[in-house]
Image (tube, rainbow, N blue to C red; front, side, top):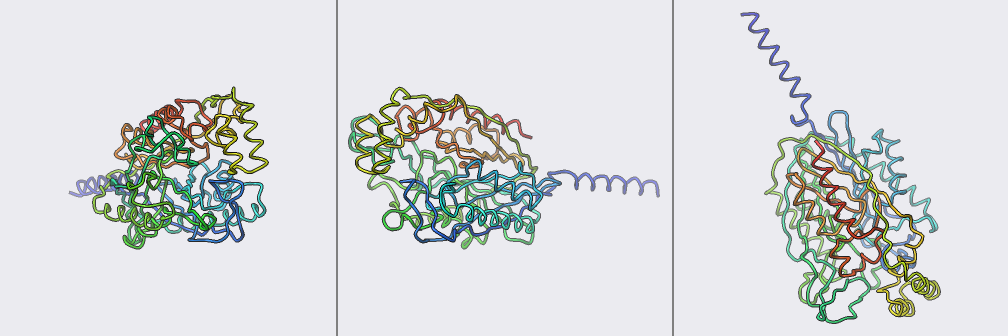
Length: 465
């Protein structure tokens, strides 16, 4: 009898040890931290007239959010920050600072920008850049430290909801059969009839349900955060991503982190009169409406059985865009006018059109292509929680590629995060290049790169166990 009892106890102990060591037994822990990244002095802003927009006040707070994920001996820090882009050098400096303070390896730190244009453009040529970087690094460390200290046992729930009237493709079919982009008002060929392609209105949600602590909600949505017009265009603001997360935190009693999806060709409003629910500058009601979609969908999320965590990185090398380099002299002439009168001056706009360019930005891009290296490299990163996939793209992905990845990766759901881990600019789809949209004019990569990258992300996800 004693031998039987010893045998049973031995088996029970072995099963217990197996359960403790098995990642599917629920040993995932998550934590949350947030800190303010509001500048203490005037800073340059991004988008529009890049060289002349400086902040003159604030409309709402800018912050950096960190979600810590811990399993066995591995910790991953997932950042969302109210900046327009996560440029390579700035991200590397931040990661080094955070890694030194927390002990988390730099390769386990992922940084995403919400793409608000009403936030600091962290450049080396403005007064106070050193001071602001110091403020930002301190905030990033604080958010990470708080997130790690906040770790708690977690179950993962996921799902999505389709929104209506919240995302629009910013390329338009005109009455003469041609296409135009919404940038810089270049609708010179006729009346707008419709958007060029169908928009992706999927709001993706991952809920981290924690034991004895407030739950965490990750959100991904494919729409640009831009900037307000009139006197508000120089006011600091997190734009609608900030309002969305605030609404969710208030109405669902969770901690929220917002990530921008495949929004390279999508905006948060419609420029077709009568079809848009919101007009430019109405980011508060827009953010609240998007937040309501998230809150209403929480009851329909599905529990994940296995939350094993894995991370993978590869280097992708693409060929540079050498299109239209034969117009180098024309492009150089436009740039010369811009230097004298300003990027957005009527003289510059006229010079661009006279020389066959849609804008100064296209002309400047063509000028730069002559001296561009033959190839450019970037890091592609993916993560998995069980069979829930995460894509971290260091560029502005078009919605068609986002939908393709979501539809073809062998994941229960693929959570898209763009403007992450670097700033390779726009990489437009073949359709975008065919209609000669603004993003196609300024991209650094040859046609077909967007589709190749989508396939690379799918391969990475499918190979990651």
